[in-house]
Length: 128
Ligand SMILES: [Zn+2]
Image 1 (tube, rainbow, N blue to C red):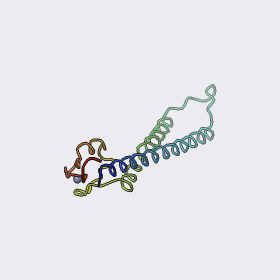
Image 2: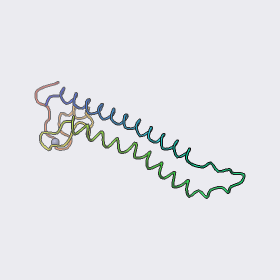
Image 3: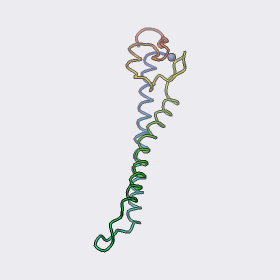
Image 4: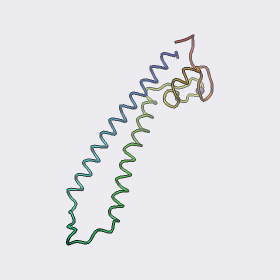
């Protein structure tokens, strides 16, 4: 591989992964919005003047559920899209076969010219 091949592969995997993450985050935000509006509408609003205040157990359960959904909506797409982007568009070290496009900082790999895992020389020829 050459330096320019590595540069374009690193850029491609980064942008495809990022676009996937943003798209999935928007979808999850829309799903969360739909979930919250539908449950709020379905919930009977308590009249605080006549009914006792709820003990908070339902609120805690609801908060845990929303926390899990929000956490998963940010964590899972990040891991999923970066992994898929790296797998389909990334480059591997010819010696140790580890992915070197997203798992390592491209500028460090370009500067050293070696695999950060096994230190094999990656680029053939001279500069660029
Ligand atoms: Zn290697």
